[in-house]
Length: 212
Ligand code: GRF
Image (cartoon, rainbow, N blue to C red; front, top):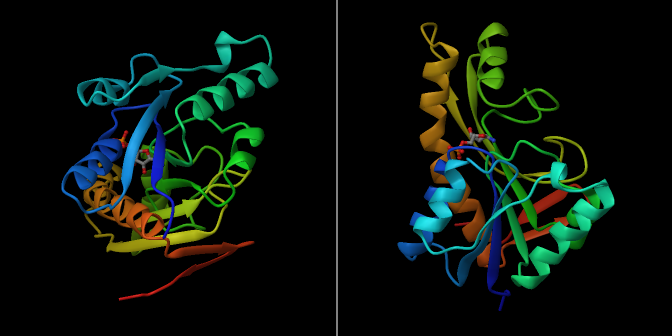
């Protein structure tokens, strides 16, 4: 039996992916899983409001509150331990997680990215910039990717990916609007695979067992 997932969601913005994860948990689509903590670098983040509305501890934690990166990482690690976290889902988190925190949860930190990684990822590729780059490159396909987080931006191995067509008439905004509902589907789906113990990570290789 896989361990129960005790998730910390990290988010900087409105939190619609966070919401989608909570909806899937309440609908019973992700077994043995709870979100036990929400963390944001932004005290105004919609994601913190989503947490409070759902009775989930909401924590504003920013590097700016600490004199050094080490103390920041220590405080973050302490909060994760205190809440019994064993899995992290980044959902629009605009900061890099401290390496020490990533190393606490090998193969158990995931992120959602609004493009088909490894294309259109990396530093500066966030929010509308991703979709601007896809349109500027005249790509015919884009989509969303859930991947495991390592110490480089948008670099870890891919767990799930889904594609959409990019139309001639698409703008960065229309493309973002087309991809967001896909994110809301595949993120809970990917977390379900972990909750069912079906994701095996070996270095950069991800295997999904019991594929249906
Ligand atoms: C999503 O597009 C996600 O892929 C990206 O940031 C956005 C967050 O949106 N990493 P939300 O806060 O979940 O609504």
